Length: 211
Picture (cartoon, rainbow, N blue to C red):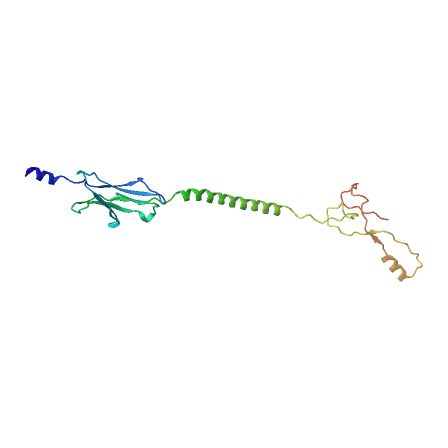
């Protein structure tokens, strides 16, 4: 009788433990949950089930694994598993395992250098446009020149026509008064110009001469 009592107390399998492979999972990668137990009595067939946040995500079957081919952020949560015999006489539950799926950093690794390159290109374009605008504003428009004879080419002042007395004719004392008055106002003027721009005059100002 004592031997039978001892045999009935022998456990069929150990308490299951749940583990995740790999230990840290990033978004888009595969996640595998395993429910590990040790069969103590030979020829004991077991079934496994998995739970996430108390909700059953895999029914009891012979597979001790739960596989997520492409993990997402919403797959994060608290997982545990249960093990039972085919007769359903014995059932054991594992401790909970907290799973935190990491965000995909590969996309940020690609986008950050690309964004920096675009920013540097934009800054270079703006600097180039600024320099070009400065150069254009610093260049003064050239005044149009007239080829050929230039009357006031050697003058520093604006060209102004200046007249000098060319000739005055004396009148006889016997001429009528009206003729004298007209003769006094009959003065001939003309503008003069240096002969050559390459031959500077003695006086730096414009020189006029009486003819």
